[in-house]
Image 1: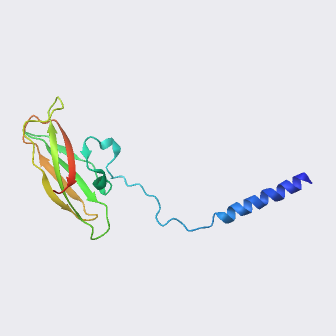
Image 2: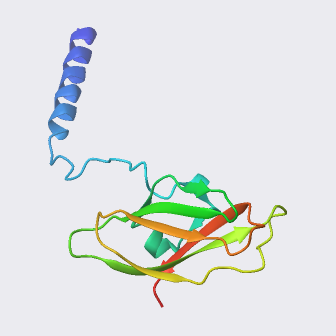
Image 3: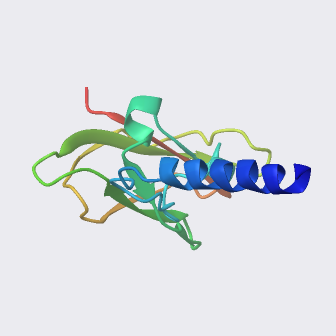
Length: 139
C-alpha cells in the first residue's frame, strides 16, 4: 500500500512539474558572437564599457616593414539606423614595452550598424614592435 501511495505522489509531482514547464519560449536564443572584443584582447584593444558592448572585433593584421602597419576589422552591433561616431588611435610600443617617441593622432570614423570597418594606422617611428588600440566615442 505504501509503495502504491508513493508511486501516486511521485507521478502527481512529475505531472505538476511538466505542466509548469509550459510557458513562453525565449524571444532570443543565446548566441555568443566570436568577434566581440574578447577578454584576452585586453590590453591590446580597449573601449569604454558603454561602447565596448556594441563593438565586434575580428583578428588584427600586423605588417612589419620600415614601419609597423596595424589593421583591425570592427563592426557596430546595433539595429539598422543606429550608428555611432567614434575615434580611435593606435599606441605603438618599442621593444621595452614603452610608447615610441611619436604617436598618431585620434582618427574619427562613423560606424554603421553591421558594416565592417577597417581601423588602420602606421607607426610614425621605426622602433615600434608592439601596439595597442584605443576606441572611444567621438569628442
